[in-house]
Amino acid sequence: MACNVELAELIISFIGFIVTLNLLISLATWIFHTSFRSQKDLARAYGSWALVTGATDGIGKAFAHQLARRGLNLILVSRTIQKLQTVACEIKAENPERRVKVVEMDFGGDDVREGLRRVEEACEGLEVGVVINNVGMTYPRAMWFHEVEEKVWRKIVRVNMEGTTSVTKVVLKGMLERRRGAIVNIGSAAAVVVPSHPLFTIYAATKAYVDQLSRSLYVEYGQYGIHVQCQVPLYVATNMASGVASIERASLFVPTAEAYARAAIREIGLKPRCTPYWAHSIQWCLANFIPDPLLDAWRLSIGMRRRNQKEH
Image 1 (spheres, rainbow, N blue to C red):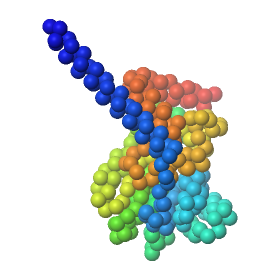
Image 2 (image 1 turned 120 degrees about the vertical axis):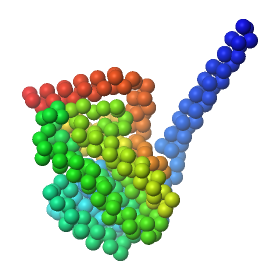
Image 3 (image 1 turned 90 degrees about the vertical axis):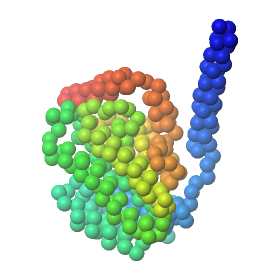
Image 4 (image 1 turned 45 degrees about the vertical axis):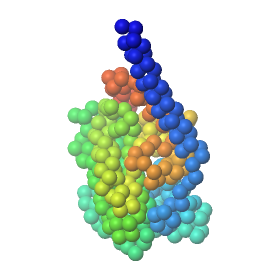
């Protein structure tokens, strides 16, 4: 009997040692990746051009500036030509040696084929090695599923799902020919970090599609030197976050778009899914220790509070 107890204690101790060792290794790896890993030369690794959708505001605009500083020429895609030209001028003023093309495309329009044709034209003959599928939209406010008008949810599906899918299709042909490329799809914690995102249900569901699309493409095309990645930000201080979450300014756990983009670019081509910003990683880690029913209840209470605030 004593031998059985000792054996059980030994097994439990060994399991505890393995779990602790795994946690320490994960922590050390995270610290190294966050603070000490050298940055990849994106132009040399993938090609001299980058394409960014949703490039006139928030994360997309920040990505465009950061990519230009790292030596890439740019194709900027967004809905409003005046805003595109403004961002292009800003980038050229900072980086006179960079080439910048702009493509007007309304991802939420009834027919995106003409916009896609213009994107394909802009890419023709260029080494488009990095693509940032950033364009996205959510509800105008927190709403129950039955309250969301058809035109609203259909537009969310077109922008978040069809937009990412169609642009990826356009750029893949050239990447396959060159046997290299990096495609970054911007997902959301609403679809990955928390088990549910009530009162923003359709948005979360479309971002779950982006996550699974990215993972499957990562497996399909990794053998051809094409790295597909889903980046999973939590809250970032952008106009979209301000509109739905009442985020007025950046904080420790809510970075500016520029801070997020700086961290995000360091992760390109490394893993199929990541949360680039260090404070977001900590939040994700903590969420793993909370039972799903508690997270569900917490997210529902937040959604209802935001809905009530908008009503009043």
